[in-house]
Length: 250
Picture 1: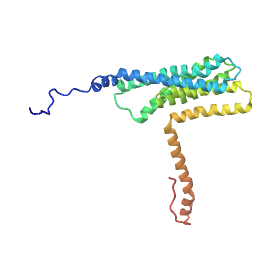
Picture 2: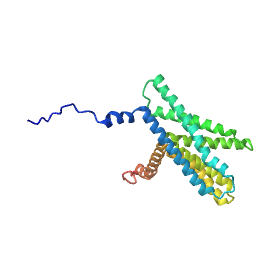
Picture 3: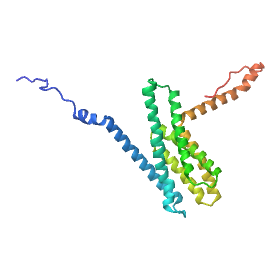
Picture 4: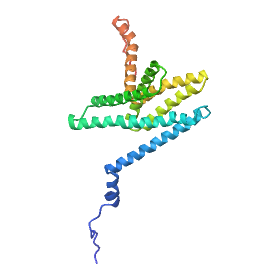
């Protein structure tokens, strides 16, 4: 009997490709997976803030529940509401507008403008919500509104760039923790360090959320340095004192 290498039946598609693959690539499965991953990141950020809180204010003579609420619970809840719901909700409205009204692919500049708008709107609402806190004077209200707006912009860029609330929760919680340290410790050195960190925190968050800003700044500094470095050579050349090539920074 001769051996026939041809298969008796046609080869079937692998089980993983037919069933598991279709489930994994289904939009609902991808949404559920992304939601679970985001929740894990948020829980991890919360746990990290709790560890940091214990290290920084474990010996503070303040109600534990109040400290935990300000340093941990408030950043998590506020970031979910403002950056998670409001900012992303505005982003969905913008996507719908682009799809149904504009009906064309937007340029990078137009997308950047839309990004700025949704972050600015969220930051203003975020700052306005903090005006409901009790304040001793109008100046205190304006100070908190301004500072919350600056922080809201920084947190907005962070969460928008990295597509997760965990980074903005960490930045927000760190800011609140520094404020608690200033209110708790009477040591002027601790107060000075915390004040410096409070100022640096939103700047660092904004910088991390907008790397193109860093790149543009570095480019401007390099171009300015090239102009300054080449100025003596250009002057000498114009006076016919020396003929040398103009150096440039790499």
